Structures are given as C-alpha cells and as structure tokens.
Amino acid sequence: MTITELSREKTDAKDCDTKALSQVSLSSQAIGKASEIRQKMSKSTKVKLKILASLLMFGSLFVFGKVDLNKAWETALNSNPTILALTCALLLFSFVPMARRWQLLSRAMGFNKSLLELLKLYYVGVFFNLFLPSTVGGDFSRCYYLSKGTGKYKESFYSVLADRASGIAVLFLTATLGVLLSPSASSLPWQLKWPIFAGTFGTFVVLPFMPWLSKKLLGENNWVAKQFNQSEAKIFWQNRKLIPQSLLWSVISQIMIVVCHIGVGLALGLTSVPLWYYFVFYPAVAVLGFVTPSFNGIGIREWAYTYFLMMVGVDKAHALTYALMWLALTTVTSLAGGLVYAASHMTPPPEELESE
Picture 1 (cartoon, rainbow, N blue to C red):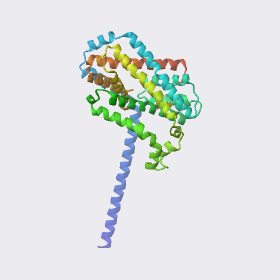
Picture 2 (tube, rainbow, N blue to C red):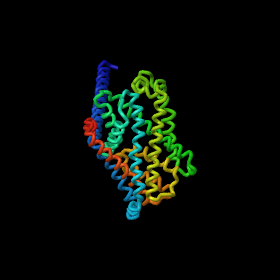
Picture 3 (tube, rainbow, N blue to C red):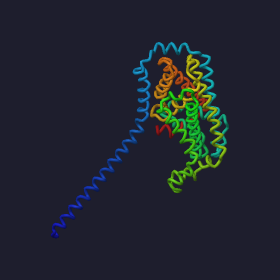
C-alpha cells in the first residue's frame, strides 16, 4: 500500500468520524429539542389532555353504555334524601381520622399543628383537588401551608408522602381482605385480584424493608438509598410505633368511607349488593382513579363504579346513578373545603399555580 493510499484512507476515516460525530451531535440536538418540546407540551397541554380524557370517558358512559337516562333520572329522584344527607355528613367527618394520622406523622417531622389546623388543611387540599388536574395539587397545597413560615418544606413533604402512603396501603389491605374473606371471591376476575394482591405485597412486605433493600441493591451512596437511610424520612422506619398508629387511623377512615359507599347504595335501594363487595370495589376504584391519567379520576371512577356494580346484577341505570351520586358527594365535600379556604383567608400556593 502506498503512502498516498494510506493518507487517503486516513482522510476517509477522519471524514467518517466527523460525519459520525456530526450525526451524534444532530441526534443529541434532536433529542434535546424533543425533550424541550415535550416539556413545553407538558406544561401547556397536560391539563387540557387530562380534562379531555375525563370528558371522553365520562361521555362514553352515555354514548356506549346504552343507559336509559330517564330511568337513571327517576332513580336519582326516588333516592332517600335522609340517608344521602347522613352519608354526606359522615364523608365530611371521615377527614378527622385522616387529619389525626397526618398529625402523628408531621409531629415526627418537627411540626406541632393542632388537629383542627390540620383538618382545615385537609379540607383545603380536597378543594384544590377539585380544580387541579391530579391529587398532587392537593398534596402540594398541604405541603405548602404546613411548612409556610417554617422553612421546612422537605419535612412537610415527607409527612404528606407518608400520610398518602399510609392511606394507599390500607386501601390495598381493605381490598385484599374483601377478596379473601368474601363468599363469592371466585367469581371475581383475576385481572382485578392480582393488582390488589401485588399492591398489598408491595406496601406491607417490600416497603418496610426499603432502607435495607436500597442499600443492598443500590449502594449506600445512591440517591434513593440516602433518602431512606440518611434523610429526615428515616424516622418513619426508626420509630416502630409511628407507622402502626398511622395505619390504625387509616383503617378507621377507610371503614367510614366504605360505610359512606354503603349509604349511597341504601339510598338508591341497592339492597341486593353484598356488604363485603363494597370493601372490594371501592378500594379498587379509588386506586384506578389515582393512577389513571385523568382530571382527578373523573370519568375513570364513573366507568369503574358502573362496571363493578353491574358485575353483581345491578342494572345500568342504577349503577350509573350510583357513580354520579358519589361524584356529587365528593364535589360537595370539595366545595366545603373551598368554604374553609375562603374563611381562613389563605393565599394560593404560587408555585402550584405557575407549574400548572
């Protein structure tokens, strides 16, 4: 091979390297631009997309559900107003054990708010959930108002996160016990059972060992491992009484909410629905509404309530009326939070408004 040929090969190799680097650079730029567009899109359109998803799901109930709207309206008019009023009152009161649970967890983070103060913040949180595109909005507002004036936002975040996890854990546990102890558990589809069992396993078997698991699997210097072992949140694993106590208050609040669901059923005359079934479908619907992209679960929950009630022989009109009744009750509860918000003269969390 001559010197000229070697030189030409080197030149060609350099050209190839230059082209490759150029392509990598262009790819990086493209990825960066796509990421930037995605971020802009996320900020500008995620609310609209979630609202659209909820509207489509909600509207499809009437378009594809083939519900007799006259019968549904008649069912609503014939509902028992006394039972509905008592159910609404109990639903409002169910936030008291939730506030007590949060009080225990926030005290572990160094806060000393009264039960009444935290109850107000809980109501304000559900009010924000009514208008913001996910339950994260309500959690953000609780973090904001709990930490306001203290500079301890991280601690307030951990308390709200632990409060949320405690509630979700009992949701899974309630559904699992309902499935295992129900006389007709074999009639339920495995597509419903397995996610419930998996969620219960994760929250009660895996989560308690996360400090140890994160160190073993990720290493002590990993960011996730540090959050479990070195941050303020480690108190939740070190204080052996704290989590069981918070779970107890979660159980009390969840039982109250299940009783509220039973109340709606009784108000509509759904006496054929077994009591155990409420302990199964309510937690399942709640989890679906939480994890599915939508505007606060609206549309998803209505479909789920209708589906689960029809599984036990409830006709479409009564099932849809039940779903709409529950939506009305939760809306009333959220509006009650708005009254608390107005009466307390609170200013809205600026970061949430900007990010949304």
